[in-house]
Image (cartoon, rainbow, N blue to C red; front, side, top):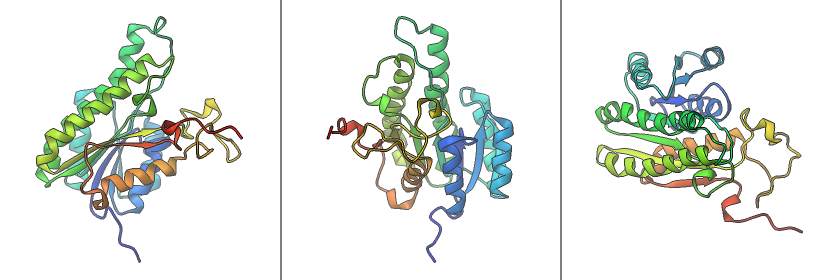
Length: 251
């Protein structure tokens, strides 16, 4: 029997109630981790923690709020003794042309997608150092790699995540804390369902010809926080079916 890859580790997963975060929480529990299910959606988050069992604890969490971050870290310490892993997955997605994007809308997206990541890394750095190190995975996007029309606020937030992940990798490396960003393309989640990403028969305009699944994303998270990735930090990992390589050829 293969040994669990995260046995005894303590993970905080933000945006865990639905979508990619939900899949990550399931995968981490299966690999022996204890998980703080952190989400602003209380009903869904509590239901997930109940489903996952005693190795999971729900924490109501607004990633844009500094005090909320301190409360989540305290919950992890109280329940499981510390923090080894942070998955900064929570995010919101809105589109608007540059000339129509409101300042309030811009600030809302940046507060969740970028400030939330910043606050999370600040909050866990000390506790991770006390445990001899840790691993952080920050969710950016392919919109953090190239410019995409009508995504001025979302793109700004995801480019920012890409940048601060590299800075954090440099600054926290001496504490044994690894920091990487992942850059998903089109993934089948509740947030993207309205775009038609669902269904096994849907063909995506990427080299691999399909949209990503939540399990695809969870597998990458597992690798990056495991000992198998012990010499990987400051990296930006594309998980996009090849979209950043170029368009799918027409045949």
